[in-house]
Length: 262
Ligand code: CO8
Image 1: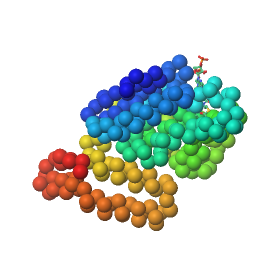
Image 2 (image 1 turned 90 degrees about the vertical axis):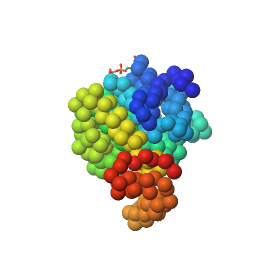
Image 3 (image 1 turned 30 degrees about the vertical axis):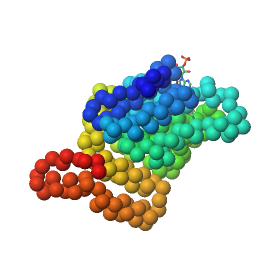
Image 4 (image 1 turned 135 degrees about the vertical axis):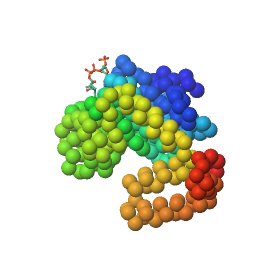
């Protein structure tokens, strides 16, 4: 199962599964076999009894420099269409991955690399990280959700400028504009904070964490009234979990909650 060529998987902290993109010669360009391995590793983490939060990262130099341009260059419309090119990227966002995914971004996160980061539930990055959607320079456009997720994150004005000029933005800007939750001065601080946050989340009730992720993500798809109603339904349903009883009882008794995951 850990026989991967383009990624590494590990469990660096209790409850934390980590996927490290590992194609250094191409700055982690996202070729189809890499994406297949990433999907396989995430599927394994989703069903793992020990993993409760997932960290996705690259190297200090590159989170991912985009889709593999050399692989895409000769594609025809009919090949792209009939093979559903890049559709499997969406496995990450269709709801199949219910455990939270944190992206730790250092170096380049360009094109498909930026889009991959935007698929995560939380982005942490270095201040000097290099985000961007440079597809326009290659005679094409973002194809893995960049025009939609970046626009929701930064608003139409900035997204339009970024996507039409192909200009990069820094990790510091990513934080300021709300793309990243936090940015860090150094790579070491980034990785430590990302692991710590993953570990914190992994320490909570699995049922509650998955429900929290689900309802926040619904806010991206639903009108406000429907989203609030959806949240209330899920909130009500959690009174059917043991962990709600355990968590509230522990509070009253001033004890640490021991989650049952029921
Ligand atoms: N695809 C394939 N190979 C790449 C990619 C890439 N995206 N990025 C870098 N590489 C390769 C280079 O070709 C080079 O290989 P080689 O040594 O064999 O020549 C190696 O990685 C190192 O790269 P550089 O020598 O260029 O390294 P620098 O430090 O000089 O530059 C940059 C780093 C600025 C990141 C530069 O490599 C670059 O501009 N890369 C391309 C960035 C880009 O345009 N990304 C967007 C790609 S298009 C896209 O993602 C569309 C998404 C659509 C949806 C998803 C579809 C799957």
